Image 1: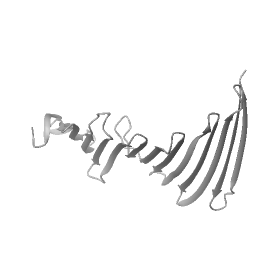
Image 2 (image 1 turned 135 degrees about the vertical axis):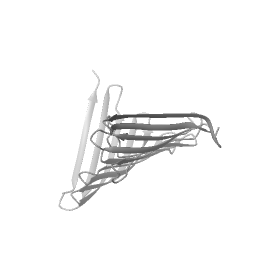
Image 3 (image 1 turned 120 degrees about the vertical axis):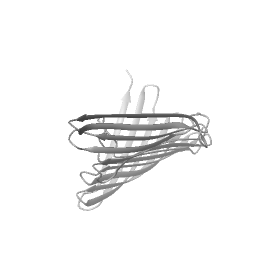
Length: 237
């Protein structure tokens, strides 16, 4: 044990290749992991020197909370700093959290920056997702969703914030009302939009259904506003 860190496991590795008194490559790594309470904690270090002279250093901290399903809060995080040839530090981050409030409300959050591909190379993207859901009554539900996606290499960003209320008016009829706000940045130009949507579903009888949906989108700049409406009739054969 080391202070609050319990059940500790430590590993270390080192390997190098020298040819004619010149170091060709080198690998070094170290890892310590354990438990703080029932939360998993891990710290890692990795260094690599390639034959072409490229040097990579990575330091990582990860935490995974108690996985007990009865707990109202669960989270995990990964924070990694990467440095190649002592240039600008790249931060690889991954955060996830889930919160249950009472029996009806929940919140889920996720964030990623510079995710690594299969070869361990950071990709120039960032994503963020937030979802809040709650049951206002037995037949009425509320949702709030936010998504954001950045492509750092292309300098583009797309985000959307939306809220909706849906529920049943009776055993045969369901309705939904929603509103959303969009932001789109391309080549330094920002475009904004707002959308309102309505939907109505009704079961006429055991074999016939009708769905009516409409949305109205308002766009900034020269983009025209858009109205859409759909009526669907379904029949069982």
